[in-house]
Length: 299
Image 1 (cartoon, one colour):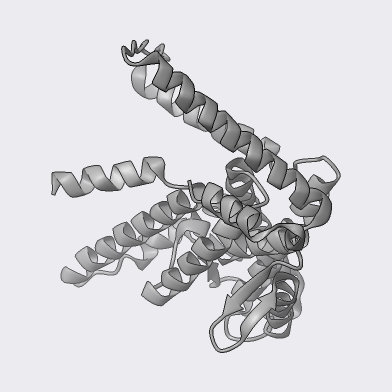
Image 2 (tube, rainbow, N blue to C red):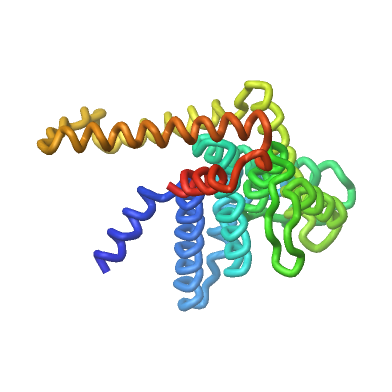
């Protein structure tokens, strides 16, 4: 059992940013599911407890649990709910990292969830159609965050082709338009809150990508806040910030120099490909350049 936990920790540490978010979502789902099973064994329900981590439509209730604007985007209702969200996060997370950085992914995931949650609450409190359900409606799921990532990638590289089962290849811009149109048409359906949140996430993705194309990163403040929280909790847990230990490595210096030179050449090549991608688009890349870019995004 200890080896399994060690492997999970190591995979989490070495994994790409989208894999880290998948791990966090799955861990939260397993924990809440086991908690629910534990309560059920004693003929009790954990729904009241778990609702404190879901986002309420009611502003008066939200004031009592403001943290839910963050926690809801890591909560899922059932196995199919988290399965499809995590598959989307995996597929489009890989595409997103071809054009943006891991910090952009981290910031946009949170920003998409925030915008989706806020639009959900505003819509439920403004439109009379939702007046009868505003007091009991709760939102959970990573869908708004995932759609923000999809839309940002579609804005950055609209002609990027993806392959869909039964439909074949389709350009990313058309796929994104279909998703947004579907959410618009289903705003008054059974999962109205979810579709409204999707639209909020889509707007966040569009906002991020368009602003970044003009040189402004709207996720920078979120990333600074996350970094500060990480530093604060690390310092609180250790009492003070420890200085990193100096490691002395004795080995073949020639091999070290060759290795560093090779890594530098690879880095320069990826920078060249990204610059070409920025100027001329994905279709201008050769098959070898596309392969190198894909391999670099998986490291």
